Amino acid sequence: MLTRPKFRVYEVSVDDLEDILTVLAPLLPSVDVEVSLRDPHDAPVVASALAGAADAIVTGDRGLLDDDELRSWLLERRIQLLSVSELLERL
Image 1 (cartoon, rainbow, N blue to C red):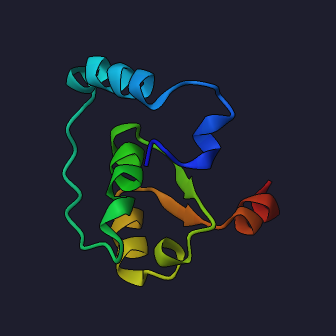
Image 2: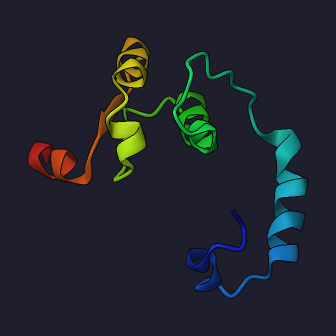
Image 3: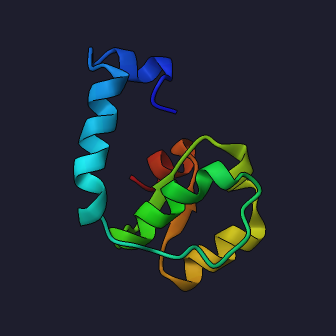
């Protein structure tokens, strides 16, 4: 994940990113995502929203947006799952 092109714009090496995450990891809250996700790689996004008491997750990821079980589970925790266009409509 750290080698994705979108991280290259910051001109930070993968080694430096790994070092930063190693230092910060013990400080981060532990959150259990108690719902099955279509893509396990989405778990950090959902866990971050829970840990940060987010009002919403805004994404273009159809795997998240089309997951009705996840949407219901998040709503029980007062977190909306929105597409970018849904967010813009609300603003």
